[in-house]
Amino acid sequence: DYAKQFAFIRLTKSLHETNTKSVIRNGGKQVSVTDDDIVVGDILSVNSHSLASIPADCVLLGPTADLKMDESTLTGESKLISKRA
Image 1 (tube, helix red, strand yellow):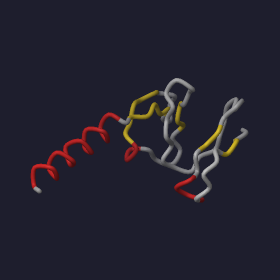
Image 2 (tube, helix red, strand yellow):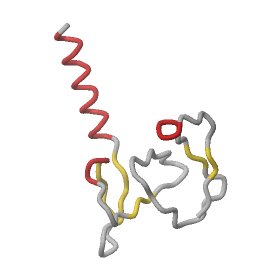
Image 3 (cartoon, one colour):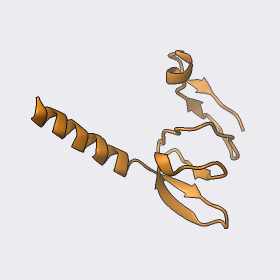
């Protein structure tokens, strides 16, 4: 029904707008962007407190002790995958 569909669209839009990432752009300036605004060359700043989902291919640059990724949407593997820089 229309009311449920409208409520779902509003909720989806709200979640999308609040799901921001901290990105370091050229020149070293740190800005908050949504997933759609991430471009090639951006450096994502991720820590254990942000529990970020990373919607892109990436290269790990920093310490990665105990870093595990959920790649189930890509590989179908249900286990978390350990990563190293």
